[in-house]
Every structure is written in C-alpha cells, then in structure tokens.
Length: 154
Image (cartoon, rainbow, N blue to C red; front, side, top):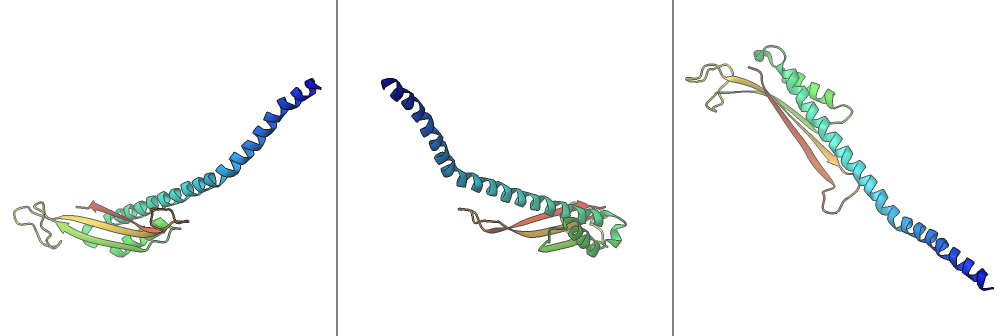
C-alpha cells in the first residue's frame, strides 16, 4: 500500500504544474494581445509618417523640374497627393520663394543688393492627422504628422 501512494504522489505535482501553466497563460494572454495590437498600431503610425515625408519630397521634386520661372505649384500639390496614395492627406501646401544670401526675401524677379541673383526655393508642406486604433494611457487619441520639404532650384 505504501508503494502505491508514493507513485500517486509523484504524479500529482506534474499534474498540478500543467494546470499552473494554463493559469499563467490565461493571465498573461490579454497583455500579450494588447502588446501585439500596440506594436501594430505604432507600425501604422510610422508607415503613415514615411508616406507623408515621401509625399513632401515628391512634391518638391516635381517643382524642381523645368525652369524656375515656370514653377507649377498645382502640379507640385497633385504630385504629393498622388505619391501618398492610398493615404488621404489633410492638407498639402506648395510654394515658391526667393532668398538672398544675406537672409532677405526679395521678389523672385528682382535682384539682391550687392549679392546678385536671388536663390530660388520650392517648398511643400504636407499634413495628415493620424488616429490611433485604441486609446493608450498618456497618449493622445490622434495627432498630426507634418512634414515640410524645401529644395533650392537655382
């Protein structure tokens, strides 16, 4: 009789351990799911930020093509919007401006006093409001992603 009870006692702790592992999994599983969802949400935000930056860069690339006097800001805007597809952007602002070496901003048709011809720049500013999938403690539900690209064309 003593032999049989020792054999049963040896089996009991292993059986209890399997139940403990199931209990640990039941406790940890919701945290693992939240962690995976959080990583996926931040990956989406990072992907959106890359798309917004690429759209701004593509818009300035479009503005750098051709002669500086014929910069088409509408084409720059449409290029930025097309590059960000399938992400819809909130605002896209394209502009052309001139600067002198001393920091003044003359008209692009004039000249810089003592410095010669002004430097011509094109700039595209892209904005997208990103909304998180879930509300995370300490973080806003949505936040703007804004990128500005500026390139000197002359």
